[in-house]
Length: 141
Image 1 (cartoon, rainbow, N blue to C red):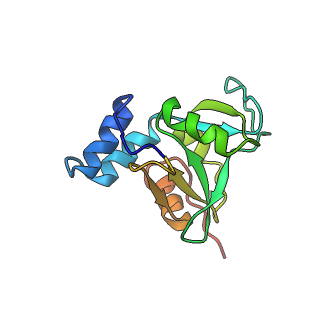
Image 2: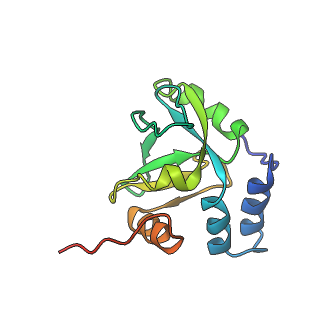
Image 3: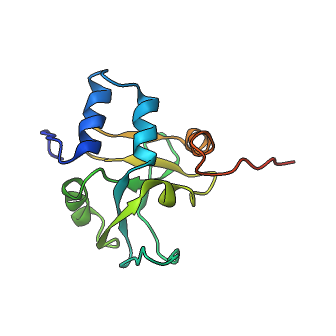
C-alpha cells in the first residue's frame, strides 16, 4: 500500500475533503453515486451494452461481510491488479450502474488498501441506493 495519496481527479479531491471535514460524507456519497469509478473484472466489459455477465472483484471485509470493490482512479486500481490475478481487467463504470446490481447481502468498499477510502455494510449500501434513487424500494413480506 502506498502511504502517499495525491488526488488524481475531482472525485479524489472530494474524498480528501471528507477526511478533512470540509464536506459531509452524505454529500460525498451523492457525488460518488453520480461519478465513475474503476472496477476490476474477470474479463473485459462492454459498457455500451447491458453486459452483466462478468464477475466484479468482491472481497471479504474485516467486518465479516462481502463487499464489491471499486477504486476512485486507475492509479488506485493498478496496485490491486497484482493482488487479484483472477480480475485482470480494469473497467471504468458509472457507480450507480455498478451498485444497483448489488445483492442485498453485499456491501461496498472504495479504495481498499489505501489510506483514503471506506466501506459500507450491506444494509447501509441498500439504504443509500434507495435514498439517491438508484434502486426502487421493494416491500418484503
